[in-house]
Image (cartoon, rainbow, N blue to C red; front, side, top):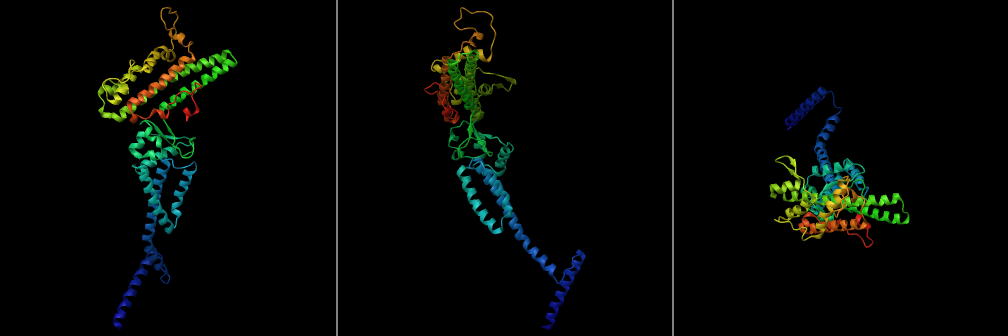
Length: 398
């Protein structure tokens, strides 16, 4: 037994000698073994430290994803985005116990919001959109509906009930700067043709105000202001129709894709890839062809013979639009023609003709919307009739 104890003691002494030799070689001679015990504790704690560091990284990544989805679903008020940024920066400062509680709760909340809105993108996809919004201080980032559906969310209507009524080219506003005038957490949205409709409505209201002002004080300036606003209103009515049809053509190409024939692709894009030349369509051709292609029919569903609004618009294009968009000087007097020369039509506009043009444009767009169906959007979310006083109410611009 004494020999055995001696052997253990010798082994221990030999081990201690080797540690001393290594310590001397490193230039850190331990004092009474304290440095050795300290290093041992550090070695023992390194796996635990790595686990905490890894947990913090996972928590940060999960919170970045949670923040992105929450922001993109417009679930924040004006100051919410900055508060979430501060929370993200504070994660590395959490204690191990607090970190575990935080991460457990975060996983639950993240899974819940992803299920709720149908999140289908990865963190990089969400971060890209969020970064684009951050790079535009003081502005709203407008993201197309089709992109949201294909890359980000499958149930975005949970955040924006009107989402299902938007056309594929419609846009959702990502507002991290509090720019939108929407109340509460209402999601901002926009459609190209809606903006054109608002232009027409605002110009018409201004023309009506100018008429009232002229009746109170008839001057050359007041008369010319009214005439200028009437001309601008007529142009806007045709711009609205052109914008709506061009947007519809884009949606058709997006939704039907390879199912389109060669001629249909040329008509919709107004471009011939084979000859690399533009193939522009007139307003009448677009009114005939685009609804037909959208619903896959052989013949146009709306024609001059069954749609009085379309007939009036086509006639007015020659009488009004070309005169205003392509003004031309004519030095002779055409007595035999019922219609005045193109130049003269600039000076002959009246409120009644503008009213009929606007009402026909609004009614025609509604009829096209009914023909092509809901997959191309519901025009009634942005299209409004004139009110009983003849103008457009405030709700038409909201």
